[in-house]
Length: 600
Image (cartoon, rainbow, N blue to C red; front, top):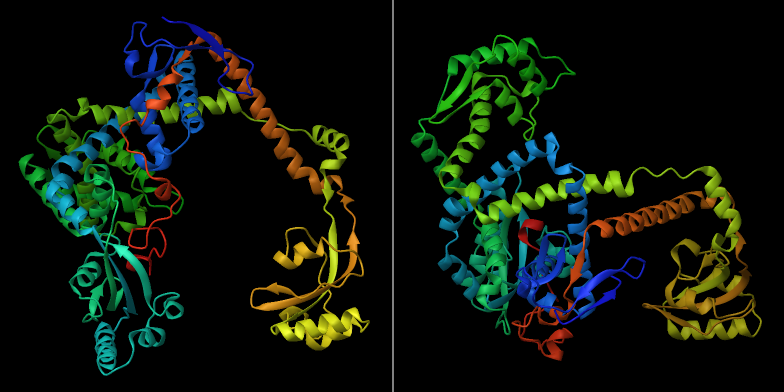
């Protein structure tokens, strides 16, 4: 070990932790950026945290050293809370153990879905094709006609508009006249530039099939019928590599290919039921419906009814069976914890059978996932661990660090009395204003007012501010920060001063200062809520710092901050132009990001 030195992790804390410059010391410290007790925070852990916060590796890599240090401190504090909760037995509570089993089942099913369904629909070739198509982006405008109960009339209207455009009506004029997209008339249907994957499938297919300047035939989506005018096409430069974009592409394809994914999922479930020889008892479903209806009361939930029936004549009876498992009434009731359904929705035996089928899916998928050893899968175990830690840390924080805070009226009154300068109504100004659209008129009115004409009379005759027409132009007293340039000018003037014309958007404002109102003290009731919030924040901070000091006496923290500079060493730095966001016109930018058809 080359040496150690003491360093504070947080400026607000007086506690000291060891800052070690070593790269050895027993554990795999080559990849460690910190150790918290027996746990190691690796470079990959910190990198994952940075990407989680800033979305992409390239964006995270741009952040300065102090941001990396803050992210590391966040991970250290989390591990300290986990260590404290573990020492106090939070992880051993029965409800946590039960929840852990449920989360494991969910995580295994999610992983099974990824492997057996999603990866087979959204293949590597699909992702690569999507990435390649995103090398081009298009600019388009459209006309949307929303579906009505008379869908044929909507289609006929779209055809009629298409004929008008073919006959010479400009597309932007047609969009301004006909489109039913929110704010579409103002934009004349313009969608700006967008890349592949931003729009629903049928819409983007039509866009990419068009040549620049062409108008599509009517295109149908779930939201209506569209006419699309392609106004531009260009290459996207300086894109991140395919491997960096894979997860984003996968999520994009999952949204765009929802119907294919659902069809594949349904087919998988049908095959699973057949393989496991799934059966359910229709006669029992009819009997169960009758018992549910006999016990139905307005205040009783379906889950409550099923639980009570399970303790009676239904005890031990199986509603559905499959190879390696069965569904009884308690299991059916438990399945409804995540899928609420009112008892009144069950009117036929088929409704009950559907409920049984849905409840049986989870244990059957869990069984299949275990057959594939997904309970030992690294990602599954990591997912469950993180969720359990989240639950435990929240409970631990609530009980050990935050707790209930009771700020008394006496504390509030004492703080108010001791800090009167903190609770003042701000200085305000009262002005008269003449607002007009013509600069020459504004110059003339300002000159006349300065020569002594009545400002109030001029305002009554000329001001165009909607809520002050026909008045002497006096506005309600306002504080700094109101009315933009006019308000800023008002606070630089003295009572009686008259301004030169001030440019306010497309209008011109001439103002006269009537009065400067000095700050006034608030009464206690006006400040009570803000004082309570302030004292609660301070109490939370005090409790946190006390906890941190105590936990660090028990759990040793060692940091290897010299490694932070190498966290993203493999990411090629961007040029200053790219980092500043000054991309050439042909490069992809955030400007002009379109609305989705699925936002309509």
